[in-house]
Amino acid sequence: MNKTEKFIRPVSVTDKEFEYSVPTKPTMKQLETLLTERGLKDIKLIRTLHGGYMSHVYSAINKGGPVVVKHTVDTHPTDPTSFFISRNIQNTDATVLNLLEGNSFVRTPKVIAHFPDITTTVMEDLGVDGFDLFMNQIESRELTDGSASAVGSAMGHLTREARKWDEFETDQSAHQNVYDRGLELRMFYPNSQSEYTDIERRFTEENRGWVWVDGTPKNILLDGNLNPAFIDFGLSCFGDQQHTLPGFLSHLAVYSLAGITDKQVVTNYIDKATNSYNRVDYFDEVSFTKYFGMEVLHRAMGKRIPGISGSVQKLRILGYGLRVFDENISSVSGLIKLLSKP
Image (cartoon, rainbow, N blue to C red; front, side, top):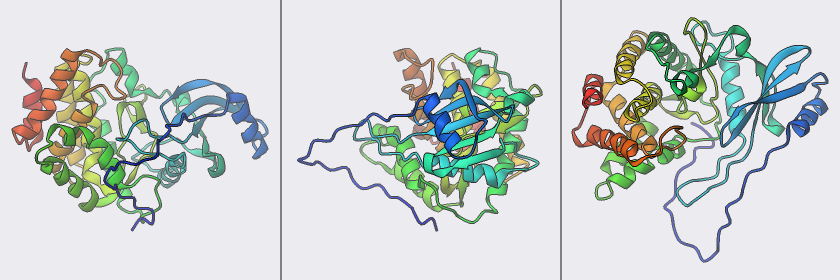
């Protein structure tokens, strides 16, 4: 059992005003100095590659060769519906990368050095082997279903491999993850809450193993042959492994409903990816559809989804997510049929 399992307490009022903090990060030069002080005498940070609200990623040179440096900061609540996320998620990320090193089915960057005290990892630069972000295909509106089988298969192998691991300490717990992702589901069914509590029970109690809950298009890379590599495991936890695949594919549905990706491409992608996953690992369609619907609702208002801003887009996505629950969709074919409707 995870020693740091965290549960969500009911929100309550207080007579003390709460001040929301803004996380700070070191400059590139400061981070370079911190790494030099820890023994990387030849490290040189070049430029920012990308970064989220928790992590900052840089291209760098170490001993004359290209590497990637990832530094993570604390993330403070922005409102009463969110919670503090420790920078230690980067230590979880490094743990998973080390566990997956050399896996013949799941490609991940090799860890060159990791410094827990400054939550910074120096890792292999997969760009050298032609890998680029999956997200770039979406943003350029060039997504095809060519990578679907390979991604589905790799995710299946990932869950199978993780089933061998002893449970280790993660910064995020199953309860935290499902609470965050189920916020919108709780809001849209205020009079019953059973839609959410059923998923919460599934996620925290069933098929308990390591789960990559943040397997989004932003955390998948593709090479020139459309073979995938996976990155960013910081928010992972021990919960229901059935979440991994729908957590990813639901994002494609959101982009399709927003008019950013081609609907036929996405329905083909979902079909191919699920079939490929199913050939590798156990697949439960009922759990899949519930996690899929929850994640669609979670992103319906455009949360960390570029390109979603207008009411027409949001209402279309929201309507789809609600129909998954209202119509009790319980199969992948049902999700695809619903997505195919005008």
